[in-house]
Length: 177
Image (cartoon, rainbow, N blue to C red):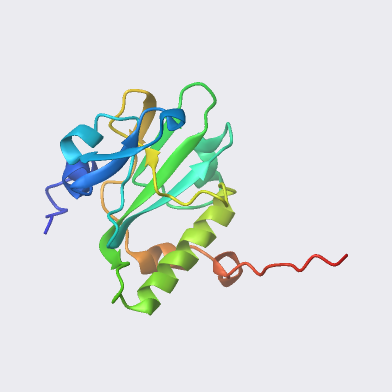
């Protein structure tokens, strides 16, 4: 258990990574699993292990990604990794309590996680097709990274910043010919 009174999310970042994480420098070359110590040297990395969700990650494909949280009245994320060339970014919120995502995980926390992830995405106008498997590695010098939050977040607190409409499940529209 991490003592958040004496440890920052930046200090805890590497130990929180999966022991074997998917990583890559160039998507054109594909991604592969590497031991944590090697994976952390790549530009893109898997933040969440397969069995849990510790991070809520968003891909903000807008040149004003730096200001999106502030401008949309959201808490500053744990970190924001910004592409120096176009201003696009990945933002990530570290959760104080991971949400189990394995076969015997409870459904209610997973539903709340999904709702909060949707609500934040909508408010940020982040990429709705981003699945969060690989993120810009905040330890990579390729990105301009800001560690913004000193403490991890409670899922309920993040939910309280969002409306029911923002967190609602998208409905598929039937295309009428």
